[in-house]
Image (tube, rainbow over all chains, first blue to last red; front, side, top):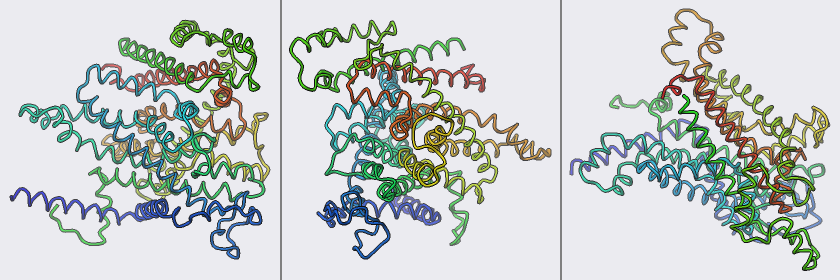
Length: 309
Length: 305
């Protein structure tokens, strides 16, 4: 019972420290705020906006941005069919975030599971998995995605599958390297000596060590997947109207660059902000999980901490 | 050392074979070129002749074996659309791509080493913070969007540079900048991290105590030791340059293997697609091998293990 209480207090201590380190970094707070905002817009935006986003109004064609008299939805201008750019961005947010979250989620779970298995068992399983990862890694991801998406019909699911597959090797290698290292440690040997099953060792002993690394990596991957998905849809492969994402919006604007710069520019700014936020949070996570670096966040004492560390 | 190299060569060869096998089946799955070649629907005899000419009438496993046998001899068949061997078409586009990737690589490594070293020398102070944020931004800008915005600014508004093509040195500036941007962001972070590790190590502190100047310390003593992680990442980055090359070929109409591959997918020109992806794979595998060798030269520990 005492052990349980101790664990409990230890845990709350770690979490309050995390929050402190979070607020000590204004950039991270800004990044997290933006990401939460985008996710909220992605969830609720399209339902609120409804048909207004795709309503074509040729009189509004290329309405210039930053003018309020045509209504707030035209604050960022209108595209070649008079659709308000702002509302198109809201619709795109849902697609882009859905693709990013689903593909990072699936590839990180599959990749790190395979990586743990590969690193734990070694031998031929390890060899085959690494070789496959090498082959997938050797072909540039855009080329692979181009070829595969040409076979499959354009849809969000297929885009997620392709992006997921091309990103699996990253997690596999990271999780494998760490598992291979952790496997040699005493606590794993102890568990083995006590007769724990392979499954139990992998889930209870190794996974807790590997998960923080994968989490940091996954956050960084959110940024690269957002960029990769946008590149594909920009090239006109992967999605089709009425589904829009941010990459398609840039592609739409490309043809009218000379007459209406804002149609291509604003979606790009949104992509940059979102990808940047994800990398900033990943950077922060890495710093927080590194004992040598996280002191930096605590060293500027806004509130004096007790010495009992 | 010889064992090490032999192991590397062997695993490179296995990877290449894997790429060849995967490319064959992926390409077959993209659909038949017949519909594209005869949009009006050719006569039975025409289609038969076309199938025979390109071996499409054989069962799939036979097609695969023939393909494998020919590929081993460097023969990837004739292009369906261009009247020449597929490998020749791929090879003819390669110099442009290698030149573009090479120049971009040099630009990004040099820039990243300079920026990363400055950041490390001024670590946790203002120059470091500015460089770190800029490098994160550089890594977050979509390649295609950067290309479009740079066309908008430098080609349309200022009219300093051409929008597309590859006629003069001026038309190389935007493609090189486009491909270099995000690697600069990633590499700068790596250089910074590696340099901080080295600069805070004992021997550098010792050298500083003996009165060596900062510049000499950075360039003579530290950079060499910081080179290992930089070399390790540079390989991955060079491979990702080819992703950038695809985008650049589309946005700037820049010649190269990227344009060839996109065209081959659209036209279902299997032989060209297979030849170019295998060529790209070969280039990347060779590059990784070169990096392993450089690694071995720089770090004696790798040589011994």
